[in-house]
Length: 300
Image (cartoon, rainbow, N blue to C red; front, side, top):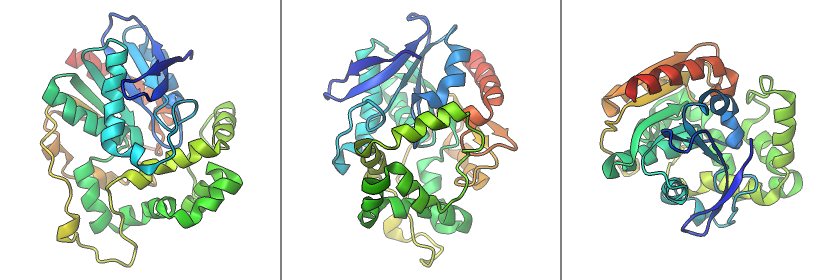
C-alpha cells in the first residue's frame, strides 16, 4: 500500500495510506502496539472500493515522526493527531476505527468528535473503554496479571534492553515468552515487523505511549479494590453508532472488559469473535470485514 508523507499543523509528520475514492465516506484506521498501518491491510483491501480508507503510521512508528520525550505521547496529542490528519487531508467528518492502542485513541477521538460533530461513527476492536479498564485492573485478577507488562515497559531500568536488542528485548521481558499471536501472522509480515523493531528511536517512542498514559496498573500484591485517588476518569456516554468487535481468546484483554460497556455506549453493536486472539483484524479478517460491512451499511 502506497503511503504519502503528511505534515500536521503541529509539525508532526505521518506516513499515511490514503486509498479509495476521495468523495466517499472517510474511515480513519488507527493501529495498535507494536504494529503499523498494515494492521488493517485486509480491511483496506476489502473496503477501499467503497470508502476512503486513511491509515497512518501513528507518531513514533516506522517512518513517522518519533519525538523522544515522553510528554509527546500524552493522549491529548495522539487524539489531536487524528483531527489534524483529517484537516490536512480535507476530511470534514469521518468514522474512526481503532485496535489495541489505536482503539484507546479511537475511544477518545470518538468522545471528542461527537461533541464537535466530526466523528459520525466508531469501530473499536479489542480495546477496552478507559473507564471500565481503569476499574478492571484493580478489581479483576486476570486483567491485572495480564497488564503487568505495562509496569515493565514503564520501568526505565529496562531501557538497556532496547539499546541492546531493540524493541524485541523489551517485548521478551514484558511478556516473558507468552504468545503474542506470532504463530498466526504471515511470515513476510512478521519478518518486516521484526526489522522495524530494531529501530531504537522507534522502540523508545512506542514505549513512550505507555509511559505517557495516565492509567495506573497496580502490582499483583496491591489491594483488589480501587482507591479513591485512582478513580477512573469521568466521561460522558458515547452516543454515536459504535461497533465493538471483541476476540474472545485475547490473553491480554479478557471478555470481562465488555461488562457494563452497553451503559457507557448506548448505541453499541457488539460482535464477538470466538477462537481468536488479540490481533483480530488480521487473525480473523473475514469476521471483521463482515462486521464492518453490516455496521457501515446499516448506519450510513
